[in-house]
Image 1 (cartoon, rainbow over the protein chains, first blue to last red):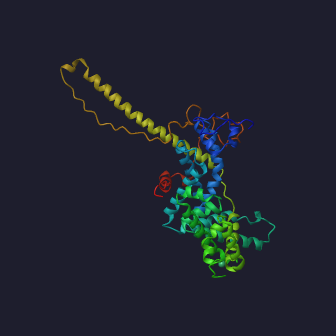
Image 2 (cartoon, chains in turn cyan, brown):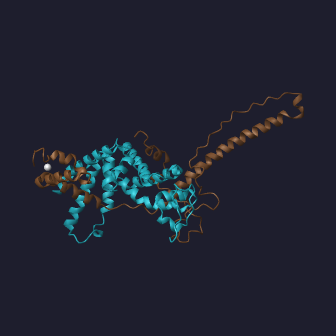
Length: 214
Length: 194
Ligand SMILES: [Zn+2]
């Protein structure tokens, strides 16, 4: 990556196509421009950057890992279809998180008729994730491990208990580290609403877990 | 805990805790929050529980996409482009039918015996579909010239630096629960109402 040509899409309509090795050093919006200029690997680079981040975001929001993976796939399909419509003056991550967030919200809405599904999905995921006890940190005694595992399970259930629109904001802030402005763009609500939802979500989360942690 | 309005009551602390935690306060206001924390065991407990809970939650195992994620995605994107082409072909097919019918009608009209007997040809109505464009015209198609090796990938032979087999799959069956595009579309509608 010794020479990086000027790739800013705002300055030129069609950027100079770069070699595959150079893609790693590009910004997301530059990758979009590269893909539209015919660099096929640019989209693959975007997928690599976002697949696990989106998976964890959707997984923590809807509580079902397998379904989350399907929704991440759907997110990329939509991005692919509408890539030519991406506004390079905006943040690509905000755009892709907006699509993922809408898919997660619709999933929850469709499921709200059957709240048991969410709980069962969390339970299933938990059992799948935590079965091999011996692979965990062995500096703790089995009792410590059991307690830690139990607490994590309760903490995860507490997040699942949050109202849907509070949970999305909570996950974006506490897990993804998004700013209030980004969360506002992603969820389409005002900064004030982001703040009040986040505060209520933190408050409710603390109330639920307080008896276990104190 | 105090009810003195000059300092702070617990309700204000909890109501505006997000401002305090995310450092959105002026230094004076921040000092009021810190002062309240020093005096109030209840709010100290709140902060302790929240911080500990968040640490535990963030320590949960991080999910990684399954190994077949990329091949499955390639397969789906292939169909995105394929669907666009199919509808274009249907459109062209309908146009061709109209053209053939028109030529046929002209030929019949210009036949030498046309003067002797007028022939009426009634053609069925032809519906011409407007093609659905799934991928923009300007967007590069990945399935044109070289043999197809998967969406957003270079043709075979230029990917020697890739692990064998990972990016050269022609066909990967989609997992059972992903094969229902109807359901995916239904649950995945963009939320226009918000
Ligand atoms: Zn207090």
